[in-house]
Image (cartoon, rainbow, N blue to C red):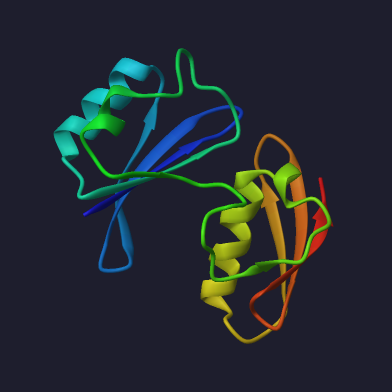
Length: 134
């Protein structure tokens, strides 16, 4: 089972992925409860997507015990970031663009993400991220 950790500006969410479906979504409020949930779920792999600093250190204790990938513009992706400064692109936007690409692998997509802020992003030909606005 793979575990996804999404640390946003206003909340932290985790969910398990098995057979392409998410299960056990949970909102987390402290580093301690995050580490307890991870230990309880005992995932095979973890992907960590963080746009904000979670209270405390970003180097969680569980990352020493589970293979953990931290999402960034350097992560191998199924999309091309045709963006002048990909290092400035938030991982929330990267995750949303990858999700849209997986759902619509050959067409154009307009991605609207409404979290703490609203982002608009454009993908062409299913895999080319052209940019967007916050």
